[in-house]
Image (cartoon, rainbow over all chains, first blue to last red; front, side, top):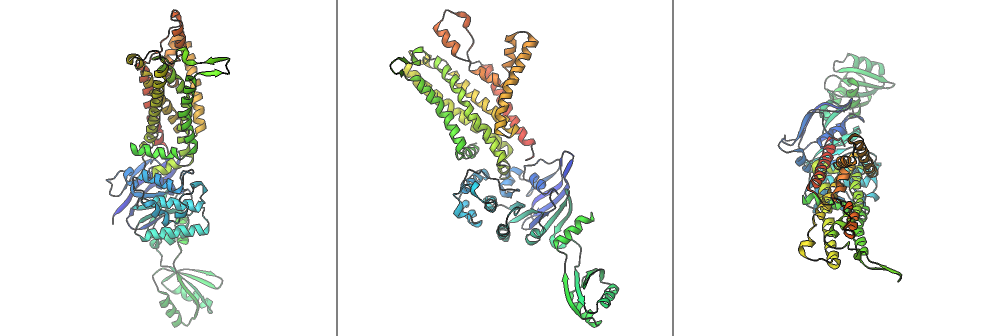
Length: 298
Length: 275
């Protein structure tokens, strides 16, 4: 696997506050990464450091194979931080021309990228007349101008209406489908769950987890069960070796698995014991439940 | 270098306010220069022709035009501080850096623009002065025409120095209005230093020498006021009003030193700052 960004023991202190504490992780080519954490957990600071706008206190990071300077590497990176920042008195096209000049790329891509985000018909309008959703889409077009190796998005759907959120997510998915590596920082769990394959979880500047989204918690999932013979079912579950914790909420029984077990095996077992299930669902914890579990444990 | 100038020019050119200010800073000194050079007839009562005072004679004309033209630098000074202030308030500075402009390139793009503008202003004043001088001057021998052409160099250095100071203040306080206010504060501080020097040394002359090392005063010293010199040409026998108005190498060196310091400090500020 080809590394795109390697971070080693990165630390950032703002006075007494440690925003990022001894953080290490690697971003490899071709995956969609999420940086997940509540507000103030150091997501934006970390991205700010690797994008050369925030000075690190300790540790180091390098782009690609480590032989390119950060300044040169950034020309192969597309990034949007927090809010879309453009010159309000310039039109969309003029703003993108300026970005082309800075990145040293040809202007021929401007129309193509504006088309991707659906702003081609508004390209001659001034930036200050844009709605927030349009501004955010222009920012994505701008980040795509150099056909980047990696696209970094910091809270790209923050403050948008549902329609805008949907548009942005669709654009991100399309870009990811083309094989572009994406690094998405967000505090919205379902956003990360829907878009990312890998995740780095931060809390108060410390890394809690880094790896695949579906391996985030070592869990075999749980059954949600209902049956006429409520008490007998509970009795059986308590005896069964594969079942760990049991939670009862009214009619609904939630049984957590210690060992892997398929729903059909379980159904057959219950049938053999003479219990007819009226409700059987096998589920894994949602990212939200996993995240809360992870952040509560430490 | 061309790339950096192009980037900055696009930012300035498309901004109406800065465009207007740039035009004013170019056009206004010209209008004043041309208006003062033509014969003005006040409804037949009397005619005012500044040319007859001999102020458009070579070589004194170099001194006079550069001195008065340098007052119009304040218009471009507003452009300089606002081109930093706007980058902070629009947060485009951050975006520029993320897009791949290094902090060094950012400061250099501003500095190159300053140098380019100062060069244009110097050339234009140079040409205008030459044309008006050729028209009015009583002496048109080449040796006399180009005798005090170093005032043009002084004018250029003065502009670059002053705008670099504005660049530094813009970087320091991030707000255009406050940066301009800082210029006034610096002016007052320089006078405070002067009075302190008078108190310590006891003589006004030494105090002026000390003040001559400070940024604003050193820039002012490059082109001393020409009024006294005009009077001198009228009354050559009065030797007590003689003064040293020449452009000295050490005056240029002091201003160049400040310029280098201001540009370097601007870079250092930006480098240390978390955006």
